[in-house]
Image (cartoon, rainbow, N blue to C red; front, side, top):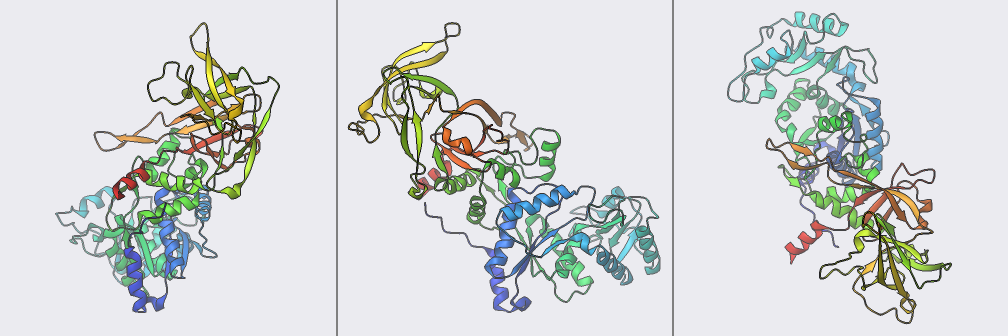
Length: 556
């Protein structure tokens, strides 16, 4: 399938104009600034691809910077996972990995500079009082009774805040801007708060920590960032971003540009909600293959190429919208179609005996590994008298147009023979079908004298004596619908584990991370739990491609 025309990228349009005017000395320097308070998700992948991809497009640089200004929620585990995810997606920050905590001393000195210039003050209002004084979207705020403290008093109090003389939450440092501003973010925002939390890098050196809106523009300026690309919820924060840089008289000020974040159907991408799923044990950790985290997608079997392709296709917009998850699934199907080896796996086995096949005979049949990629060659698969097929591929009383196996009906076994069902064996106690007895036509072997004889159904199978036992995990969406209040509803049936599956013997050496197409079943990935002769596979995605069908219909 030919990739669709890529949508216009307004951020690149801005950069093109900047380069035309020799702004920033024709430099392009971006950054990806995650908070190490959780694992990255598919929404972050869009930002990663945009920031690193933009730098690459213009032969510029992109930094990885951890916004570690809130030690109560941060952990080294998250730092390590973020680095792994960015590298897995195919991007490299070289020697440009930074932390906001690298600049804690400089943030403090800049705060002193603001106080001395009369642009910041220490406020004794508590958090609730600050909210009450801030006003509303239609009413201006009220000035804090501590707003007009002298520079000397503010310097003394702020230094004592740093020294640990005051209790957590008892005082903050606020910018002195405009309590009547129509933008509530400009109504004397908090710059520093007291928090006796142990930081993952600085320990207990500091008991005051800068707020994101204060630390972020300064970090960008220190690192020489030219274009500070962030998501749309920071648009109203841009005036504060610019105010901080102008108040501190930075010569080169980065330009903040906002784009629409990724919203995906059937998906929740709030770190708070994802963390709750982990903590409440509704999922098996941050890398659960049902999770929209990059580590979850990686474990499920998604490829970095497919995710980068998806991020390219959805483009960069100025307004929020929701992307159908079927487009993401289409991208992984398209990527795996040419690279995943085809194998046969029976998920719900039904025993099938070929009555006229020699009891001790075993044939080695030829099978192509990938008809889309002949360079992947062929393999041998064993064929014998006793086989397994899928239970759903047989019906005792089939409806019309059922072209699989039924009493007296013929089908072809993939890479093998045409067979006919002669007898059905049932469990006497339950009536359950436990065995099919069939005959085969030896002349219809693939490549044989009657191999061209046509039947309407082709089934996959495995040889019972040679098949390997496997566990297969089938995943559905974690969230399938919305409640009356608009919140996503958790799907308790998002995981189905099949423990009696049988796969062809070529998978004996399958290592974690190896992806296959199970014929007629979908794409599967060898899970990390596969070890010590235990085979475990995750279904990456089924074979049905609703997005591609919709696109073809729309283009018709």
